[in-house]
Image (cartoon, rainbow, N blue to C red; front, side):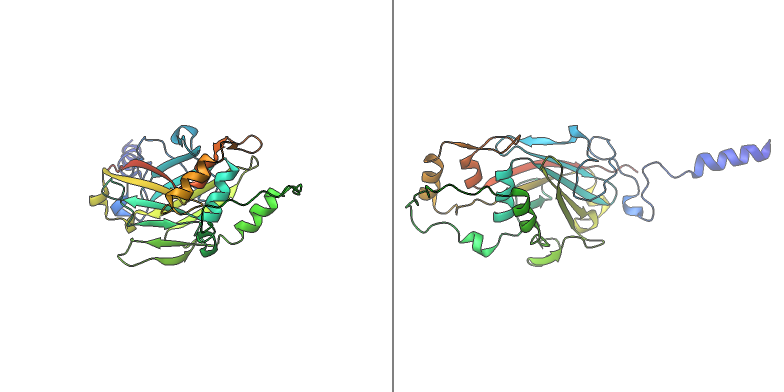
Length: 268
């Protein structure tokens, strides 16, 4: 009987808590903001994320979600519209983390990285080119997408260690990671992982409200509002493909911003 009581007591008082993070005393117990535990895989697909974790940006129809565990901050995007996908891959996108819960852009990740040739793609004046009346060959969108994805092999990070912008691979153990892919419905998925140790210690981060933002660069420079406005007003049609959401051409052209608050939760 005494032996049974001893074994029972050992199990009761020495069992590791369900949400413990081995080897990390600073962040040993965690509780994501809504208490839904997610087994994050960081494979580019967002299938492990519950559907109700996502919110939708109405302008772009991008679905986004934020989560944290005891070690990392996670962000996920689902981009259904092919026009927005092409915009992101061609013009680049920035993700920001503001630890003061505002909308500061001094810390973040640039991915995809905007190519110089894309920056200079806008015409120098307001003249519009006449459309070619000749019938155009159908474009293999999947092939074009695959070709573009071959160049998405690095990101730029800035503001995490007080240094300037630097290039970094997408999958670096112990550091910031980004993964992306497409599913069978041609929806683009993107996942970010940021180690909490790069943002602060457990004491400073506990119950801290932060802001996460994304900036989708526009196809035309924002410092040329005359051309920008003319392009949007001269084309009233809407852009969509297959079962993708229909998006105004103005949304494809102009810069888009998405911001969301997140409270980092820990329990001891």
